Length: 116
Image (cartoon, rainbow, N blue to C red):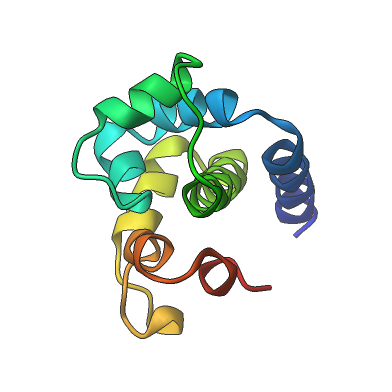
């Protein structure tokens, strides 16, 4: 349990402090362009790659989704590994009405998807 709490604190701090470019780069490098793009509600991953290269900044709602994806991905990767984080994000979850966390992040308003 201590490892989870530590990973959650580290991921939260990073999601608040890191720039959208840093978050986009980490998500692309670790979660992949398909997962990252889908979570942001994008069909074309080129926009996320532009964010990662400091060639634009996501809009407010899209940035909130990026921060949430980054936080969840970093936390899970810190406790388990990147492959488990990707599997968790794509798999249905009974606590989310049998929806995958990835689809909840993409479909729900950012404040609902990331509710505490």
